[in-house]
Image (cartoon, rainbow, N blue to C red; front, side, top):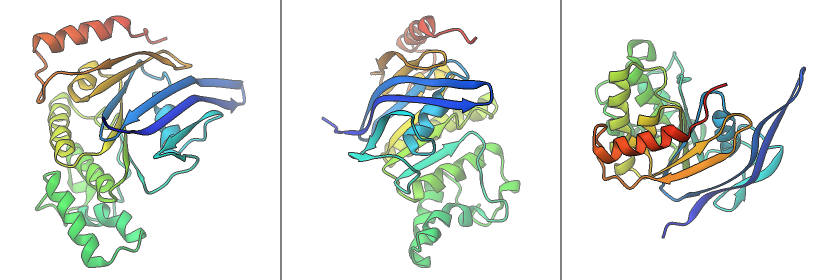
Length: 251
């Protein structure tokens, strides 16, 4: 039985704004197992991104706590990688420069960091593009660079906030397939945010369905379908219908 690597207890977040307090997260308890692929699924603007930011240490919770490997999370740290929808790649750096950047900041010797970066560049299928710049890459290729960069620092946990949300449908399907191959080859604990039900079921070991804002957990589903998954499989479609039926309507 895998151990719990992430534990959120009574987690809450309220923003102090000019119009008053905005309560975004409401007393959430979540446990994420080591090497689990957990998907947070719910309506748009419900608070999923705020939740993942609190778990990653990018936002400070106003109530409760987050622990990763039994250590309180209250700030960003190198043990947590983050991949966003719009990749903040450095436009002046090549693919190799972007992927190896985190190791350079950690003062890893040049030979070692280039070898590690090359391994992850190969893993995401970008061999031959090491000297290309972000502007020369497609959206899907840029996301592969972001995933390689996040993996390259070898984090304990990888947080992914709707990383494929801006891609066209065909590229999105391809990226989902590629991410599964990468994850099965190089297991990491992943917390993935999406508001796309097919994506959630295709990727997840477990789907946590969130309510409208202020968000809390509505229900959890263990996804026991064999991989690789088929979008038109009878059990896949049954799950899609069941989960869709309980999701709050966007307000």
